[in-house]
Length: 230
Length: 97
Image 1 (cartoon, rainbow over the protein chains, first blue to last red):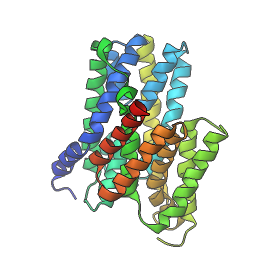
Image 2: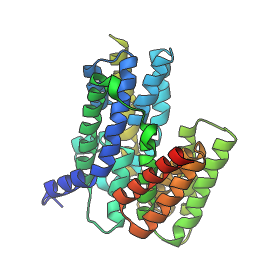
Image 3: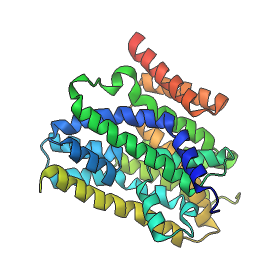
Image 4: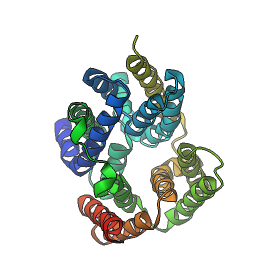
């Protein structure tokens, strides 16, 4: 599978564009927020490249603005990122037989958006793999960093994403992607269990919503492990 | 060290460990049987959980948008069209109702 890695890479770049536009909108909003927390544009660029986890960055910076200590902000961001364990574990075949540096690079570039897109493209019958993940991940990282920096510089001109319902962009994208991931009737019960666990745990406020995602994902996967149909 | 730099370094180190731990766990789980069925089902279950968490804090506008997006997704299987449809419906609901 060594042939034409760059085709896979650039197919990833191209395919992620609609999601990258959404990432760009959030990057602007993040830059605006981070400037209120005393971040310079170099701080934002560094955070985007090294952390590369949008929702965790937003939550951590928001904690700083709310007056929390660096450590508290760090824990809040980290809690949101625990689902990434499941994300990278679920694409293990992409990492199989890859050298360590490629596993490390692919892991670092795995986010909700490009992970889900990679799986969706595969379900649609495209033969995409590791370099698709890396190409699409690299693209949204660049957009995320650039938009964050622009957000600091033009902070006074940035509208709230909710004004144009841009905050719904990822919800709609994840709905489209779940349609692609649907493997037929055998997914029905696991998916219903996932949704039920999330709805019950958020309704009863059993734990933080980032934990509800992990609990819902695990409950659905556990349900699937008991089925006979493969 | 300034607060932004310290926060960045802490979060970067921990987030990378979380991501890489997933890769390591994935490599060490068995490649057949119940574990494989669970791992194969995991992506879809995680995505619907993510959507469910977002919608659990949403109102009628977001639920209407989600239903519209689902219908468009089922009919077209097209990512940009689904995103545009969902955003448009939520925007219209927020603006005109």
